[in-house]
Length: 81
Length: 140
Image (cartoon, rainbow over all chains, first blue to last red; front, side):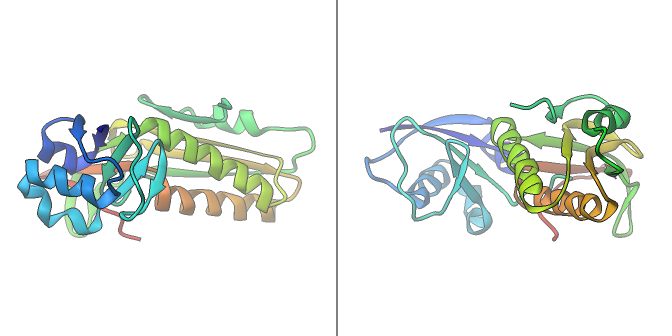
């Protein structure tokens, strides 16, 4: 299944783009999205442990299932304000 | 989406937020203004740059406002966060809260900025005077 993935801050700089589409197995979890992205960008391996995930604008955990055609975002801890 | 919650890429007009929450029954208005500071640790900062996951950030900023109205006896709240380059002394975030009395206005304002800094997907990059630049993770 195809999933749109948005990345932000230094993760966007590592990936080289703010948005990519990944081909993932049906029923995959948040962790699998991180794994696939790390396969494509091995420098992300050092960052994975603290990254946050959201699906369609809501925070999800690494164990949550990712739905087809959803918008996933991967980002570091927030630092607004 | 209520006009009380905004993400903008230009200077924030603090007075406009105060006016948004102004109500005849409100006897107190508090504001929080977060500004770019010219140092971090012992390093001189030249300016800040903010990036947002705008759709999610706006949704969460609106939720913070609605939650503040539920939790505290306040009349109204407005929150604006700025993105892009923010030079020293300019505001990156402004919160205005009106209430009948000052205590809930102070409490709701503090609740709103603390929650914003914890959950809203916005990131800050510091540009140092020595030419270095660094994305900042949550320090709190």
